[in-house]
Image: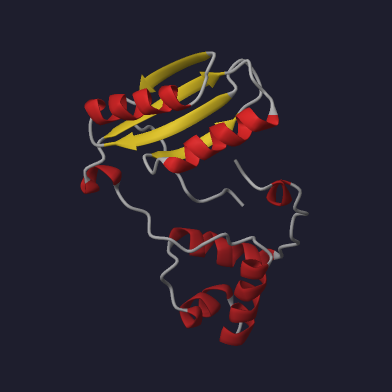
Length: 162
């Protein structure tokens, strides 16, 4: 679950140069500030100042290395759909703690609609997923839980369409 401060952030005003910097930085964050500045047509200092503003304002959340899951032995992607009949604060805190506890859980979303939560899990095998699944359902009371194995990734992007 995300911090409520994040959810209520006012969008930061971004100009064309900021957007061009962000589009390129989403493709390859290893570019030097000098190369990025030349790419968008500003000085290195101006580019650095813009980057710092976007970092401190939270536009840029982090700079990371994206791994290929199967190359590091995590061949299986599962999605767990959760329905619950409990919406009390204590239950939500416990559920969030369970979600945070397991590194195999790479995403979790609270949804509008028929499903309350959707959880993305990355594991080495179906057996590993089954062990995780058993742990989760043993730790928290859930009304209805279903899981699905991803057979093929049709699209997976980290870059936002800005």
